[in-house]
Amino acid sequence: MTSKSVGDALAGFERQITQDRVDAYAEASGDHNPIHLDESYASTTQFGTRIAHGMLSLALVTEMLATNFPNTWHAGGKLKVRFSAPVFPGETVVTYGEVTAINESEDGLIATCTIGCKKPDGTDAVAGRATVPLE
Amino acid sequence: MADPLISTAVVGHEFGPYDVTIPTERANAYAAAVGGDESPDYGDSLAPIMVVAAALTELIEDLGLFSGGLQTVHAGQEVSWARQVKIGEKVDAVGKLAANSVRRGNHFATVSVSYKDSTGEEIGTSSTTIIVSGEAS
Image (cartoon, rainbow over all chains, first blue to last red):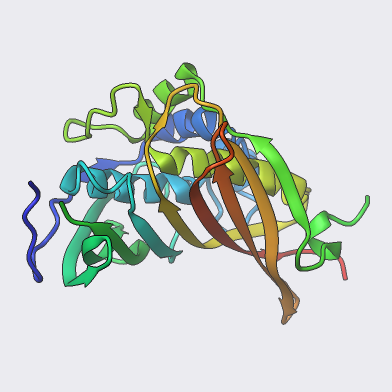
């Protein structure tokens, strides 16, 4: 049983977003946009260099949710996030979350969490909210 | 060059259905991209966000956002999921343009997607908001 209370921090983790990870994510998702893969193309964009897929950063956040809510995140979980800043290959990001409310619904207890993924300078790459059924 | 679909599509425009069945090799690539020591063991199941990403790639292509000169920003994402999906399990995704507006020369589009299994049961939904600049207008 996953016991959570309001104010509990979710166990997060660090991950270095290497270009190898970005390349692997392109294979996984099918998104081969050159802004993620081709440095010469990416140097002509507003970012000036390659950036990781935003969905890769979000995938890390969902890994955190799956770790903290192993039996319920994939069966009734919801999230809503904004992508606030790009992650550049080589940067290490940190996922984070906190339980901000627990409410009763007709399906049982639902935890509401702030969630996100921070860049090395402390700014959010991804930030938002998730709701997850509790066991 | 023809205008990308995002320039002409109206709210309610439907996309797909897309077959977003994820084979083993793509699941392995996902693990290589995302995984780490603390990652959960999914066994023969997938992280649902991977199915969402596969559908998003199809949507971006259909919207013409890989066209040269366009700068696309993935601004927001919503996901809800009812159950886990197995590697190789057939999943179809159907999208619908929920919003499409132009402000200060930038397109703001939101596409909602429904994911159904082989029985036709909805197993997840998502909503993606993108901002596109660089269109000729």
